[in-house]
Length: 352
Image (cartoon, rainbow, N blue to C red; front, side, top):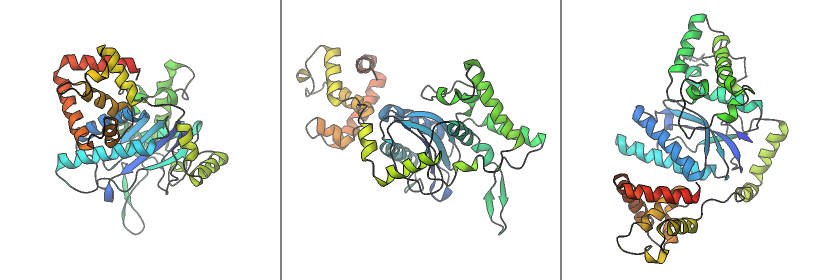
């Protein structure tokens, strides 16, 4: 099951093992990225959300004032993960650029998409955004509007310019799909690339060739536009199912999402007991011992609990103390090789 973003009001469903194309735009279409440092931090948070919420990112594209991403959520927790992601980036961006107020325009958008040929074309839609939105024009009223950079059929010179723009866009997963670079470790390209060819060695070449054909010939009217202004993409039966899920609330999806368990807080305590060879009672509440903070640090990344919930696991610790303490522990771990080794051993025991 796959999902894509449209500009219409989406149906809010969280589907176990579902796929989503998410999009979020800056408020009043303002830029959400000022420079490369902003974009690098955004991608580092994208990696972290994969760890915290077990997201799988299959494609992404960062533009100046919005972004696109194709995401899989095994635990039916898209809303929870995206809320953390959006707040984390907004807070960092505001602090860095000394601004206050909302960064993003409303809630992120997500629209369900059915598996099959749909998802292959959806990835092309995502990757072609730097070219599609490269040109501008005027409507009949004389207003400046974004133009569809793929229509009409370009001249050879225009096609070459489009291709160069696409190749040179660093902030997209297209370069990994096309074989120009390996891409980050957290990016999953295999599932979509399998639809390009049955032969592994041919997949990136075929994908690259298909995108280049779109750039040279121009997209047929409506071929890529079907991913916009929709509530779901797929067969009539699929769209109907999504509507029913939205109407019934999330009882079904929540039930299915619980089939795959997350790491439990007690699992982390047990893992550290095993690594240290000591009972938790000997170190958990001992002043000056790092055990408590190591447990909270690992739990914050892998349990999917809020700061308040983490504090409750240790007898009602204030959520602000959890936040500050785990932050200090992370800085300490960067300087302390023994702590890094202890952390790595605990993670290995947990198999995460």
